[in-house]
Image 1: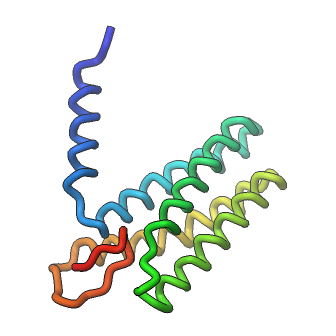
Image 2: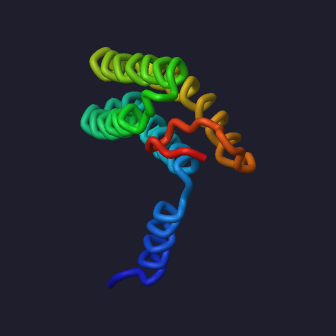
Length: 139
C-alpha cells in the first residue's frame, strides 16, 4: 500500500528544488551533505562498514557537485572553496579507510560553517553585481 503523503512530500521537495535560487540550491546540497556525513560517522561507530561506505560515497558525490558548480570567474573565492572541497574528499576517504568517525565529524563541522555562510547569502536581498558561485548564475 502506498503512502499518499509520501507523494505529496516528494512533489513538494521537487518543487522546492525547481524554484530555488542557485544560492539556495547550494544550501540544499550542504544540508544533504550534513545528513550523509552524520550517517557515515554513525555507521563507522556501529562498525557497519557497508552503510558507512554508502553514506560517505553519497557525501563525496555531493562534494563533486559542489565542485562542479563553482564559477571560475569568481576568482580566488572559487579557488579556495575548491581547495576546501578537495581536502574534505581526501579526509572522507581517509576516514573510511581508517574507520575514523572523528575525521568525518571534523569535515562536517567545517562544511557546516560554510553552509551557514551560504544560508546568509541565500537569505540576503538581491544586490546588483553581487558575485555568485552556484551554477554559474549571477544575482
